[in-house]
Length: 271
Image 1 (spheres, rainbow, N blue to C red):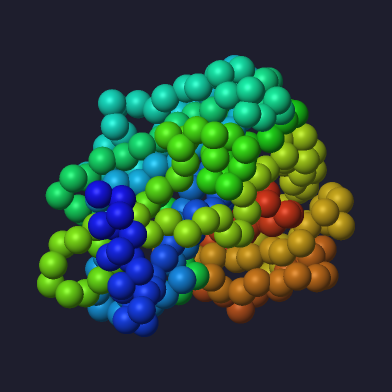
Image 2: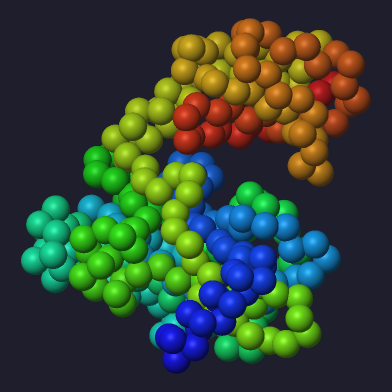
C-alpha cells in the first residue's frame, strides 16, 4: 500500500502537480495554542478533502492539555481522546525524552471533509488546545519526523492524508512534507512575556481622542486595532505611548498588543 501511495505521489510530481502541507505551531494567547497545516500551493476554487491527520506534541512530564477545537467540523479524535506516551518509554532512542510526556493526536474523517479552498502559505487550523497548569518552565514542541524519536518510533510521526487534486476522484494520500514556521515554545519565556503584557495599562476607556499605553512599552513589538467584525483597522510598530483614534466612529474596538509569540487583547469603547 505504501508503494502504491509513493508511486501515486511520484507520478503527480512528474506531472508538475506536486502539492504538500507542512505543520506549524501557533500561539493564540496565554496557554492556548493551535497546530496548523500550511500548504505550498494555491488550490484555486477546489476544496481539498482531509481524511486523516495526526501529530505528536512533546511537553514536560506530567503536563496535560485540553482540546478546545478540532477542524474541519466533523473530524473526531481516534479513540475519542489523545494518547499519552511517557518519555521514558522512548528514551532509549533519545535520552532527552526521559523527563517529557508525548501527546499523540490522531483524527478520523474516513469519508473526507473539506478544508475549503486556500492559498499558498495560508495557516489552516487543525486543532486548538489549552496547556493545563500554566507551566513556567520547559518547552512545548511539535515532534519532527526526522528526530531521533520520530525515526525510531514511526507511530509517533506526523501525517496529513488529504485529497488535494481536482480530478473528480477522491484519492487521499499523505502529503505531509515537514515543519515550517514555529515548532517549539519555551514556557519560561512565555511566562515572562505574558506577565509583562499583563502589567501594561491601556487608558482611558472609554476613549474620545487618543488611547494611551502605560508600562514597559519597549516589550511591545506591534499594536493592532480591530473592529468588532474582526477587520484590521491599522497596525503600528513604533510610538506606542499614544494612539490617535479621534477619527474613528463611536463603537467597540479591540486593541491587540504583540510581543514575540505572545499577545494580549483589550476591548476599547470609542465615544
